[in-house]
Amino acid sequence: MIDWGVATLALAGEAESGDLHLVKPVGRGVLVAAVDGLGHGAEAAAAARTAVTTLDRHADEFLIPVVRKCHEALIGTRGVVMSLAYLDGAKRTLTWLGIGNVEGVLMHPDARARRARGSLVTRGGIVGSELPSLRADVQAVAPGDLLIFATDGIRGGFAEGLPRDATPQQLADHILARHGKGTDDALVLVARYAGGGRVRA
Image (tube, rainbow, N blue to C red; front, side, top):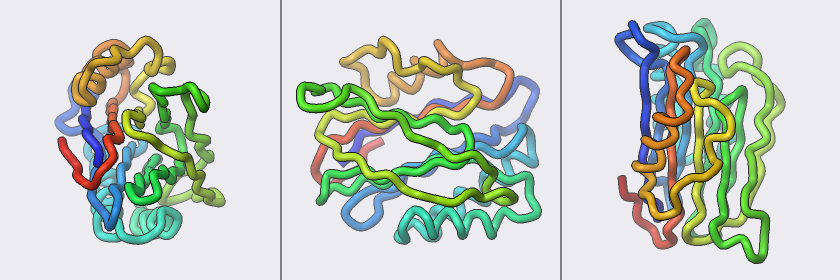
């Protein structure tokens, strides 16, 4: 149902990144998430791992209850910011929400009947300490549509001028190389909706 790729880089001098991801088939769709542990280093990575483990364990629930479970699991940690989406292959919809500054972009290559691009409206807060009111937004998707999540180690404008014939992995590598700040952990996750029911990495 999707082809996807991820590119990540830890801050120089750190043994592990606090920016992690999850791509998991669930029911008739797939859950896609990008998680950024606050700061960097071992404590950020530990918080991000807790969030991803919780997302994985409760992936078959709706997005809002899953985020609340992450919040409960992260109390007492540094906390995380995150953006996540559920691509429903039967309904051809993408349901997404974001807390904090993990940027989300949905690009429509065939834009004759709709806007060429949509952006995820994230809500300020921290999962684990300052959870805002949550609302998930729903977008229609068509084969070829591209979902991109990028943590704050990636400069804005990363969706401009992307090579059209590149694979999701090539796009993720391209964005990290061109737009990585080098002052924080960084992660880019790219998923292309292909239709059907399979997930390919």
